[in-house]
Amino acid sequence: MADIGKDIERPLGQAVRPPRAARTISAGAVAATLLVLAVIGVSGAIALREKPFRKLEEVAISTPKATTVVEPAAAPVAEPVPKTEAVPKRSGPQIIHMQTDEGDGPPRAAIVIHDPSTIGQNLRIAHIPDRALVETSEAGPLPVRAADGRRPFDVYARPWSGARGARVAIVIGGLAVSQTGTQAAIAKLPAEVTLGFAPQGNSIGRWMQAARQEGHEIVMQVPLEPFDYPNVNPGRNTLTVAATPDENLKNLRWALSRTTNYTGIMNYMGARFSADAAVMGPLMAELGRRGLAYVDDGSSARSLASDLALKDGVPFVAGDTSIDAVRDRGAILKKLDELEATARTKGFAVGIGSAFDLTVDTVSSWVIEAKKRGVEIVPISAVATDPEKS
Image 1 (cartoon, helix red, strand yellow):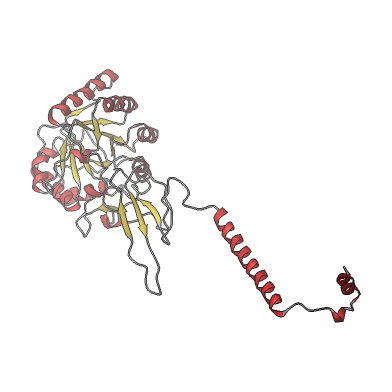
Image 2 (image 1 turned 90 degrees about the vertical axis):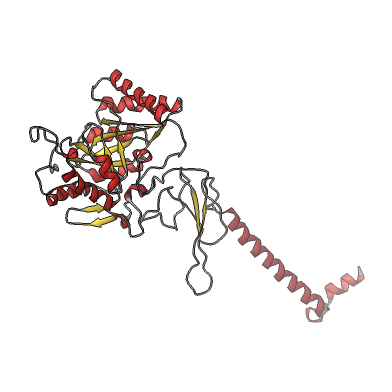
């Protein structure tokens, strides 16, 4: 206590100074403490902020600039989803693009990892034309084989399981003629049903995009001369027997230019035209050069399309029956059941119909039940005979 009293009474200038070493240690400890607190604060802020890869549908990758991109099972398109955008997982194979920057040089090549567990289209880009498959012309964009040999028939085909079994392909034509009917058909019909667009229709580009985004494969219908023409008239720019080859090619290219992203064409009428090799030959040669398929609706037994398609390397498929020649629900269901029986016998069957409200509703309900019975509904390209692959 005496010492304490002396310290209190001692003048400020005579205070006993602590040893120099002790003072130095105290300053270092304070500095270290402040540094630790700063590190903990920054780490906590980083840990608590929202992380972009916490969502289940996206893939977490520690490598810089890693993004998740969903790509279709078909050949790549010209305008892929930008690498900087994280895309939610969809029905197609999952592909991860990783790009790293090291030093001053260019980024290293991407590493692509395929997930073979799923098959399907990337609906976000199915409506985007592959620029390598488009030829610019006075009529408009025309389909063409790419420099690397890819065909519109391959690139724009809707994927399917590839399994053996009963397969039924259904083509519903006449889209773009009625705006309300087209909208209903695209919305109601299952994605496996192929849609045919009439070149005389309106807003075909917009409807093509809607159909492709819903997963449908599409074909373009081309008006060909029937018997008793022009009393029976398929419409504007019909290809005829009396026209010159150049005139017919001009009319064909007009129809082809109406939109993009289709796998082939399908005749609209044309019993007389398709029975004449002199006029069908140039048409098939043009399709072969452009990498398109020919779908014969099966309405004419005189059609030479099958033989000419094989000669020119054109993928070919013929319809087995018209499902709505009689516009009655019971009659349509009977035709669909006949298709199923045919498919169980020979492996596949093809039905052709039109975008009537009754047809659309009947096909939509039948497909649901047919799937339950083990029937696979496939796009038209899945049952085509392809000379380049056979």
